Image 1 (tube, rainbow, N blue to C red):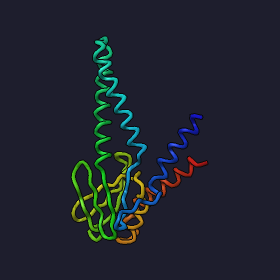
Image 2: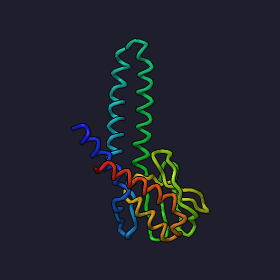
Image 3: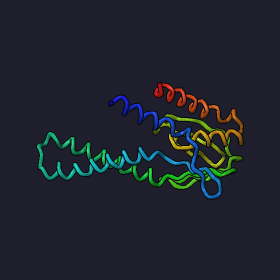
Image 4: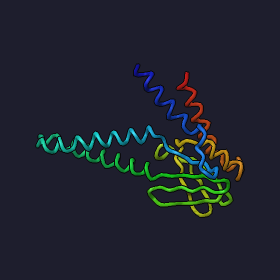
Length: 179
């Protein structure tokens, strides 16, 4: 039972980038993060936030003080993750890409892009590097493979080789979990 549950969760997390992206009213790609991650972080935050007053009001022994600090730090990090998840928006039109994150808004034209890389930091991100700077797109969002395909058609497959290699690696990992 536990193995089935874990396999189902991992399979659903790994297949997200390969699912087709939602479409906006003008036909643009709407890249969406996983709701499972949002619900998990929100649930974790609520549990940590509920445990803090109980532990603080109890006037527990000093040995538990470190645990209270760890729970508070965890609640803060989960809160930041929930806010970041709710603020993130990414749209990809026929000739442009617009991303909104905690750091602000960025818009790139595909003509400005020089390469699309990949980094494993923060759970994996595609780095869209252009003349105006770098835009980071999480690798686990719905429609990521479709976006990389679209960009590869615009700027060339060689410029997207690193990102395509990362997607192929995710595909093989997903196949391991489906057996």
